Image 1 (cartoon, rainbow, N blue to C red):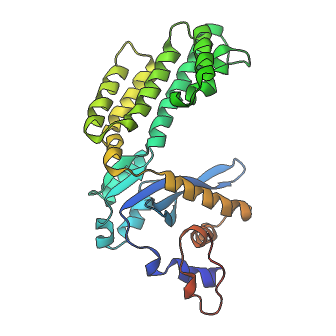
Image 2 (spheres, rainbow, N blue to C red; image 1 turned 180 degrees about the vertical axis):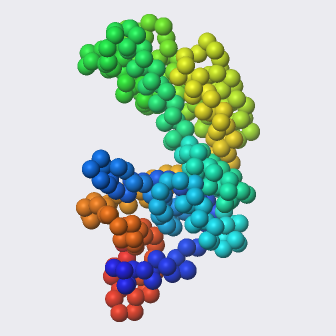
Image 3 (cartoon, one colour; image 1 turned 45 degrees about the vertical axis):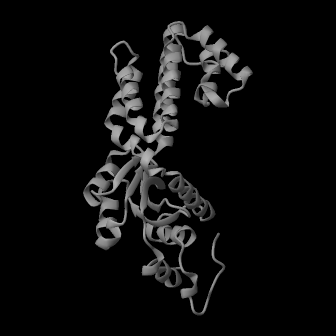
Length: 291
């Protein structure tokens, strides 16, 4: 693998021009008696078709920055968009190594934060009203999945069930308000680019109001910190979906190999599978190219 695979992944022609770059972490290995988790960062060209460019150790700002700094300057200058989840270290990576690239917050992870705050409100309300964690027959516990489903995906029966459960388990309307906040945030991605900023600013102003639940005020502060990156999606129209898909390919290799303990072997195998190597470079042995 090392003898034949290393020239393939080190081939200068393997990585072409990139206009949108995505960063995301994935679990590499659990080590020691306490199963300490060791992470790696996937560096992905998120344009179609997606390509895993490389994986680097750790999920710090420095690891991908070092990789980018080793690339030719004209290659870095061609990157117009950088896509991340709401990660401070990865935001620093782009700020340090690709300052001219416009940073985009991945829409899925933005809505995921809202769903997390919604779940926090539901759990707190459950404790305050019934004095215990959710049980199978408790109204708010039964509503937990319905609350995360997009409103437009609920049929009449689903909407009626959700309304009845909130009526029974949410006496002060805090869960309902958190649900409306989540749905309003989802509506941001239906807005045209020229109204998105104002739409988000209005939502933030509503969420940080002192009368709001503390979880919603926290959501408002998060949206304020990432306001520019969130609204950049309307111009870029790129997401970290291809990066997540590439991470799924990485997990397939880990599953087939029953895990890896040496980063060199791990990197080599995942790049041979998802890094688009030029298999024609092998003069004496040409295996079938992976899909």
